Length: 431
Image (cartoon, rainbow, N blue to C red; front, side, top):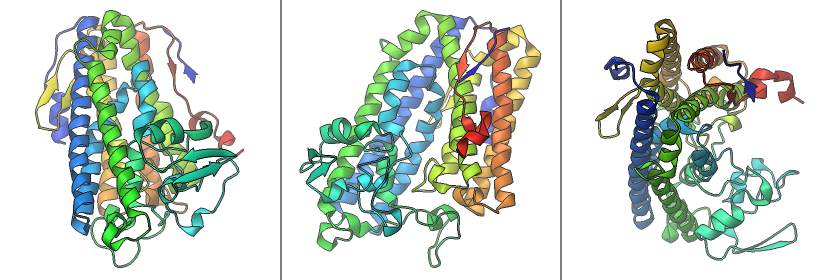
């Protein structure tokens, strides 16, 4: 934790409306409106994903598997923008691990390649393969897995033994089931695969893994069962979070009842996501280690989009604007307007830093879509790719410095932002 001392079409969206100096209570009320809109879009895209997975289960084919994968990628767009509501809102923080926990030890869920190994010194569930087994004996503990249910996944398997790598639910469990392992590392894509760099380099689970009549990988009916159950759980979890931001929701009430606390929650979320979580744990750590296992959407090679939409989400919160999945725009009283009223030069600086990070993210995203995937960019010896990623990190750190100044200008007191050894104590990463 770091203590602070008190003291594109996209461009058009982020420059459109200039609001008069608002009251803090108006800013926090609109912040809640933004959260509601984003979680509603996350829910609707998750429901579309559920429909695509139902079609895959009913008619397994290369086409229905591709459609389910495309629906998963589409569902990540609004959800990743919601991550700016983390860190400052306990209701979100207590819930988030159900839906977006990572990285995961995929051998707990399903079959893995021999290169994965057969045991782990730190995880007894490393390769138990729930899909292939109706009963497990782990560390002397008997676990009945004969029926794959929400209770089994959430209460028995998710973070079993207190190990955060035992991820049984959420977007990344679904991602692994749809793509399988990405065994390509930081090297070139296998020959013979077509499409974008992402499509050529990501995991390549066959559709027959979901086809009991032509089953590959074994246990196809249980794999389908797991996939359908975990997707239904994601939909239910997002329904819960939508409720938390509605007119009578607990999360909305928390940020509106005390506007100063609400502003602190907003800036805590922005600073922590920008610095410790995104610049540090999600990007710098993987770049230092040159390790594709540290990329956020590792099975689908969708990490470039994951990071990009995190930045868009932070811009949404500061500027008070969000473009919804249906193309409409939510606009209202913003942090930007509040800062501008107190220090116009600082607001200009903050906007410029946000735009610079967005530009760096766009360069990374474009490279991933046309030249090489994110995991290739962070590979050892890839000076050009490494530089693109490092530019993103540098921009995120710079924008965090401006966020710190905003916190001081709004007189919000000492706010603890998330830190990361990769940024604050790099030597510790290798100990």
